[in-house]
Image (tube, rainbow, N blue to C red; front, top):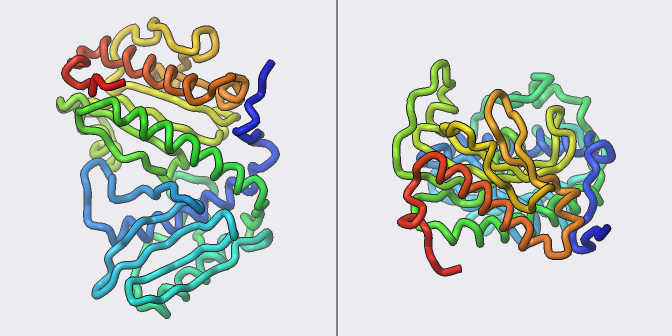
Length: 304
């Protein structure tokens, strides 16, 4: 049994407290980007991006300047830079509670004259303790944060290669801070049917037919890191289609719809993890696209 040495283990139970704290930090920064970025379809103005030292917002406009907020997971700092040559840093360390992080971030933005008013509580996370009052989540294990980011770097590069095989409308590879998953989404070009009872967020995200793939580090439902792919609307019998790597990737039920799943631990056993991940992504896409009647020939870049 081969465990790939270039990808570190990421057992959820070992870093779950750090993951929860980091997720809340990231939601605070994501909400700042949400409030100040111009709108883009399917909420593409909202996510964060992997970069050579961590994850960050990219340039964000604010009055007469642009600014950028980056989590530096090499030096373990939050770095805020502006186009007026200003640089501020906040140390990321064990014991830094969400409440203190929140106050430090907004005190720093005030000094930089960046006005960003957010709904200052978690999105789709429990408990719904306001950020300024959250003295529970204070764990920051640098080694696990660094390992998580290293995995994101690998996945980001593979997802970008996968997205380049498609010439239709395709999202950037981006980190959705509400669910903490790195994702890329392909579109058929057709509108999707209405979703009864859909929230404003989901109505916008799923206004058109999509096949989405992603990586997330585990949660209460899926208790280990995994890659996923799903088709919306979900075509009948898609879960009868072959997934690769054969006998390892599998279909699961996710809130009443089929989802393709390939665990990170299984990927680590592969001799060539990049090739295995691309196999999984392609097989899940082909399964959904062919069952849903997408014009796969017209949407293929035909260069790989």
